[in-house]
Length: 72
Image 1 (cartoon, helix red, strand yellow):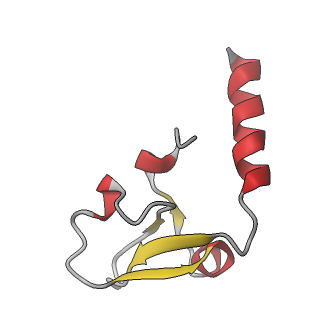
Image 2 (cartoon, one colour):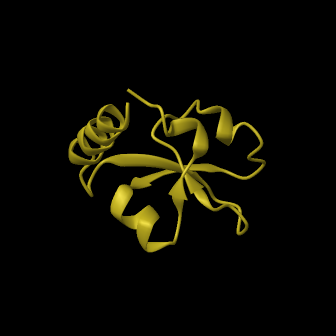
């Protein structure tokens, strides 16, 4: 089981390059990025949803949304 999780983690990380588009909420209090524009984690965003690169999201200190962890 652990080996499977490690392999899955490596596959997801290798498939996501720094230029991969992600979505964030433009709220000053938002802390997560999302691979899907319709992610449930973005449903509470009352500000604009913005498409940026994964590199920019990480540069802003954003972390992966918990809804996206099991993303295929």
